[in-house]
Length: 353
Image 1 (spheres, one colour):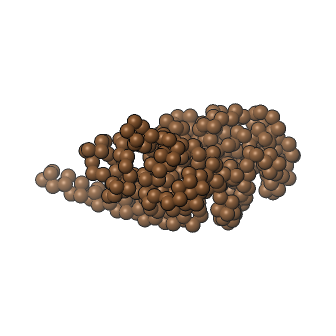
Image 2: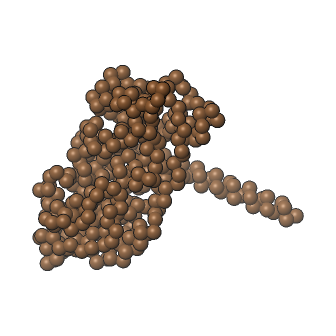
Image 3: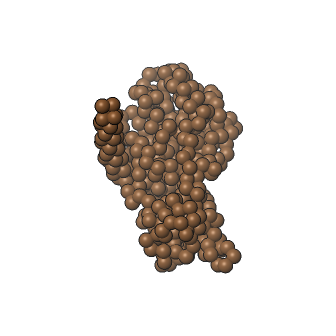
C-alpha cells in the first residue's frame, strides 16, 4: 500500500473559510452563514515538522540493524491502518516477513477491521493481527506467529518492532515481556532509543523509536493522525481537525453522533455540528455564543477515548480511491511544473538577446 491519501470530499466551505480568514470581517463568510451562529478567528495550521532530528536518526539506526533481523512487527492503529502505516517500512524490510498488529482494535469498527485484515493479507509474506491492550493473551499470540513465519529454524529469532508515535507499541512490549520494559504514555514520541528485549519462545525483540515519514501528502493523513493522537497536540489546531472529524462523522457515523450527543436532527455542516455539541455540553462564552475550541477539544478527546463507540476513520476502498486520485494530482503537478520550467527558460533566453 502506498502513502498518498486524501478524503474525497476535501475541505468543506466552512473549513476553507475558517482556515484562511484572519478575522470574520476581512474575509467572506461560508456559503451558508446561517448554518452556524459562531464565527471565530482560527489560526491556520502551520507546516508540521514531520521529520525532526531524532526521527531522522531513528530511521538511520533502523536501516543499519535491519539486515540482522529475521522478522518485522509493525504496530499500526486499527482505526487508521492506512494512515498509520509507515511507507518507509517496505523499503527498509525488503523481503523479510512482516506482521502488522492492528492495535486499539477495541476502538475501531469491527466490520471495517475485518476488511482491513483481508486487504493487508493480500500481500505476500504479511500477516495482520487485530489486538488490544485489554486482552494480553491475544497480544502474546504474536510470539507463536513470529516463530511460524520464520522459515529457517533458529535457536533465537530476531524480531524488530516498529510503529509511529503513540500507537501503543510500548504497552505491547511490556505485555510480551511480562514486565515493565518500555516507558508508556498517552502522548507521541515516548520511546527515544533502540533497546533489545529477550522474550519467551526464543525471541529477541529490538524496540525502535516511533518515527513519522518525511512528508505527508495530501494533508488528510495528517488530519487522521492528529485525530487519533499520533501527533503532539502542539502540532495542530484542535478546531481545524475537529471540523474535519465532524464532516466525516456526519457522513459515516451519524447514529453515533445522535446517541452520544442526543441530537436527533443532525446539522448539515461540520461547523454547525460543533456548535450543536458545544451547546449541549455547555461550551459557551459570554453572550451565548459557542466556545468552538472547547467544543472541538471535547469532540476529539471523546473520539480518542471511544465514547462515541467503535469508529474507523478509513476503509480499504476509500484509501484505494484516494491513492488513485493522488496519482492523478501528482501527474497534474508534474505537468504544471514542466510548463512553468519551459516558460522560465523561454523568458531567460528572451532576456539574453
